[in-house]
Image (cartoon, rainbow, N blue to C red; front, side, top):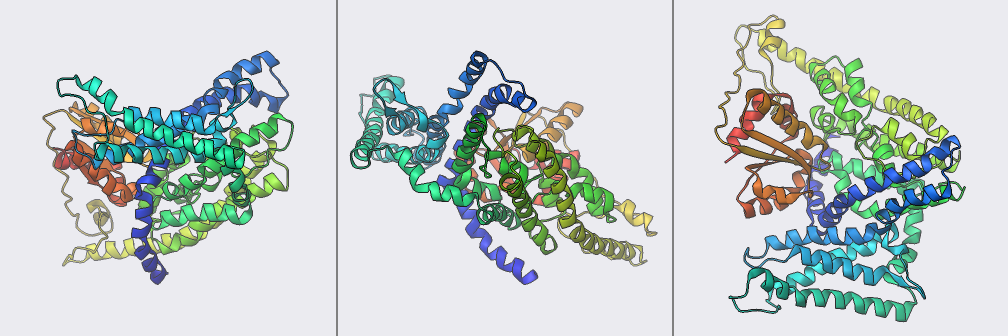
Length: 571
């Protein structure tokens, strides 16, 4: 296994490059920006149809009014995603351009939405068919969002714009500067639309769905589901945030399947598409990537080593809400050969059980989209419309996951107990020799004294009060892990009345905040993005700092260390 992990370590730079690719990032971040639309519209969807599980049906007029908000938000999702994807790629392109000659992101958003509307709307004798403006048009929306910023980039970089005299006000000059790149962008997709209708009789989004329909079906197979679940866990085991690589490829499929499940359910049929949006959150990543929901609880109950007991205490609450970085880095699981088998196989077994319940036992699949932080044992029943079998499934998943992780946890726990005993015995020797400890792992003086040796003085971090207002931004993949550290800093600042304010964001969300920050802390799960982030922080003259896994967990648990960390790095 040691040889195996060394080979995996060699592949890590390749995976990091994929995760950090500007186009992959733009797709991922563009979709994240649209998540409020999905969650907002799902509220109306649930009010309209969840009562059906208990035999209550709204009058048709009430149902139509409830669905109005859903149809004009989720029904236009691809239109909005075209704009958000283009905006995120534009931000990346602007880093390469002089500050005095930047692409106007507002103009790019408008051009992308106009172009996608031309591409996706099907004219009828009366009105237009908007079918492909929603979930079925997502792939085409990504194409628009990735192409238009490049058209703008070529025009702006080479000054292919309408130039006005310097005496003309900047806002007027910018308007004319945007005319040529906008015209070029819209013209390109107008021509593509005409060509597709002429030669295929349909539009691009519809053709994409037809071509990729075999892939949609393959993703719902046992093999396809295993590849998706296993790939996410494998990338995370290598130290690269798995969903950041896998999600952009399968999100259009998951969103389309979620909408299709609801339509089947409304028609009185079986909601049979397994790979829906929350399938990844609640089933494959039951408690986080690797399906680690049960692991922190197992540590609390069964672990004898101090390290795993401490990890269990710190991780069981975040892990309940699918923030499992305390488990991943505190155990650690990443690049730990003992946990390779359960970390890869547990999510695969979970999704196979889920598929069996849907396809063989007739349980309705997920048809509503819930926040990813909803605990899996609650999220699965809610997202399936409280399907009776979903409660049985949750119980079975908990049993299987415990059986998968417990044997490996006991092996690792025994190793740690031996190491801790050896360290304590070494401390008890008269000629004390400092024990060799892994970086970031502290040996407490009190523990040494308890073992019978002299108490070792542990130097507390010296904290100097911040004497100026300091703004800190913590970034992670979904905003959960970063929230733990930001909340810890804010709590400490309030208690000590320090001029410190911290906020947490998902990487790619509200990146304009960086301009107003004194320090940006990148959570270890997003280490692959440090190159991209450095370009942004350098642009605004802001300090960026990365963290290791064990170090980050310590910062969330030790206020003095966290404050000292900020003081050392903030300008």
